Image 1 (spheres, rainbow, N blue to C red):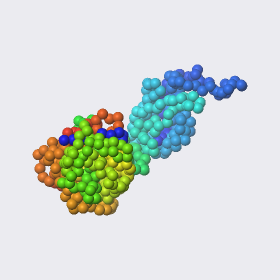
Image 2: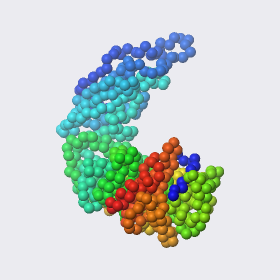
Image 3: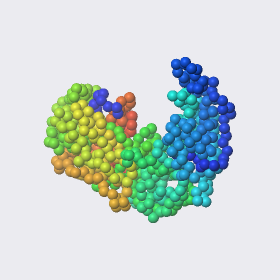
Image 4: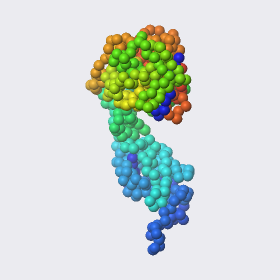
Length: 551
């Protein structure tokens, strides 16, 4: 039995060593100006203004501009090359940094066949660092555009012009690695490798960045991309090794992960266009599994920021019971319509539970049973409950980059929408798994993947716990949902002390909502999201079930 609200509120580095010797394969054509080009100096006296070329670039213009830039780049003339771009200062600075840090010699640039205004090319070089030499080559491209002020062809500067892996602020460096390689192991000592667990590749890179120098390993010499420091820890990317010149000695790093459960989580999301999951140990907060599909790319499970939909009703229910506004057996009707702040909220298919209890509305996920309490709450009540009891929005020190959830203070209709996990509420599977874990354990335990004793970091702590009556009531609500509510199908046959909550989050311009599911079984809690798939119970539920039964 599923009743979801329908409403219209939400939307869901560098330059080459001067004097370097190498070959440059150039495009054909002369240095003559394009027939389109009219120089300012050619304008006759009395003209009202200089004619500026417009329209698409000719093939000849693309060839000439790219040839001049690539020639200047190869020769090590940073100033000349930069002057041929739309960002001379930025380009020159990046090129000068490269000259000092990349340690390239014998560079050859070989252009490929242009595709419109895009010019691909292959860069081949020899890395030369303190007597250690190694060949290296890569393909990248540059785009030629027409300058808006002069109309002349110029290179559109992007860090990828110099290397395809570079982003703003990144640097290409050759030298001793900033951290030794690591041999990551799970909680039982089993090796965790990107070959065996592709979903952990980015996580292992982050762990090496942060903890490699705290192991007994020794760094080697590498060509690597040194990532720019992000203002937000959740957005920080790990450095990327491009070529190993001399191997270092790996240091062993113990994690809280469970290899068997990690494999189960990876199998559960595999084959889905987009899905992610996370599992934690409620009594301690230890992270047991992290999985994403696709395996490579953004780590949605720990860094994602999505509306969690009705899984947020775990927090909302705790708030309402803490305030004495309701309880599982109390009459708490779910009307067809509720108006808040001028917005009319409607349950799916205009359904209603006229004389039902709060437990019935929770198990059926009937939205207006929750939205109807908006009038009884202050704007910051939900924010405070999420932070002070469930740890959402605190600065989690997990050991890897994470987004730690957000429940902003909102007003009127947006505040009402937040009660059902829409509005401005944002979470990821790790955050939502922690919600279920908090209920199971009775208090918040910040998730972490490496023991805090390794670097003496302080884990986030919630400032209070739920009232005993609230905790027992919430457990009964989640058990009812797992046994006879919207989560019953996914949880059928799962034994032990169980509890669950489904969710679906509507997103503007998306035909189907994002499916969410979170549940606990004894001392194990997990959550999953399958974007744009529909109902939480039937789409995200099987992912969580697979993890719970593997544990």
